[in-house]
Image 1 (cartoon, helix red, strand yellow):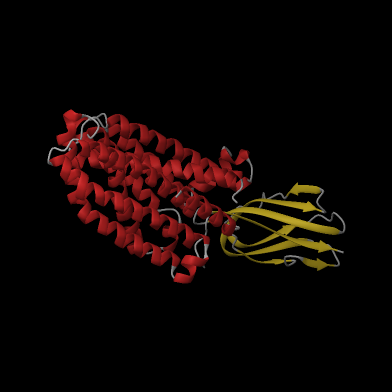
Image 2 (image 1 turned 90 degrees about the horizontal axis):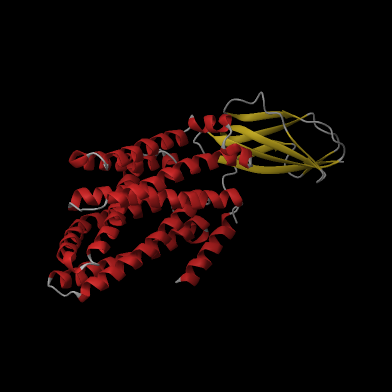
Amino acid sequence: MPDAFGLAAIVTKFALYLGVMTAAGTVMATLMFRLDRTRGLAAAFAVLGLAATILAFSLRGANLTGDLSGMTDPEMLGLLWTTPVGTALLLRLVGLGLLIAGLFMGRVGAWVSALGGVVAIWSFDHVGHVSSRDTTLLDIALTLHLLTVALWIGVLTPLKRLASLPDTFNMAANVGHRFGVVATATVPVLIIVGGYMGYQLVGSFTALIGTGYGQALIIKVLLIVALLGLAAANKLRFIPALRAGDSAAASHLSKSISVEWLIILAVLGTTAVLTTHLTLPA
Amino acid sequence: MKAILLAGMIGIWATGAMAHSPLDATTPANEAIVTEMPTEVLMNFKGDIRLTRVAITHADTHSMDMDLGEQTAFTQEFALPMHDMGAGTYVIEWRGLGVDGHALNGSFSFTVE
């Protein structure tokens, strides 16, 4: 079991993933599918991401001294600032700052926000297991992986909102259909780069089943398989039914999205354990 | 589903063990028994690290933080002066920062007869 700081680091990392991915995904989906009324959603998750970014950095300071004093110790935080952890902090602050600023800048602001989201996501290339491998292909794979996941997460809440009001059923069907088309390209990318990264980081079947890292990865993959099942039901059943005017399909879609959200939370939680607490197989 | 998840999480935490402990060798070696108190402890790491805290506990009673004032660089080898606190087991707990930004920690012990 991790100690108290280890546990706090996992929870903070989970909040960081949730905040950055949802904020970035929301602004990407808004731009791509011309969604309305997403500003509050994007801003709320961006603020969560900012808070988690600062807390995560501070907690790393505590990890260096072994007590709370490290969270505000200028020497420890200054030391961290000189490492890639400092670069990631800077990218997240700038990225999420741009994302929030863009929300209040009108039409061009949508692009500023999306750029900010990409910068914040790109920060994950600078720290962690992937960055230590120092291969460009793996960096590209991680960025692609995160961008496709973010878009998926970002479309969920606006789509659920549209599917909950009879006035916007048509729009829900339309957005759901267009996301389904995009997903035919992004989901294979997600699976291919996910498989590639898993192979690069774990390396063997023995390590996959014999190490904590490998087992956590198996849990993550099982969760993704469940998510893909729900997504397939949405794309092949509920969205076509909604487009055909079946209003009952809207409620099925809405429930399906709620379950998708729960699974995504579990995926982000598993990922936080993977990246914070577990070491890569040797 | 919840039960499977929970079982998985517990399994992961149980096998996770000590994350990131790249200490290659120490002098005295871990769990070594020596007849004389060494004047310094040597720590060799696999990669460059900056030590941020080293605490020594003697015979489960006296615990003190080492002065790391002069250890201000990222390096692989450290020589830390020791104070003779008498016979018994010395446990050295260390924390540090890898050049990649990873927090590192671990411990080792030796016994003076």
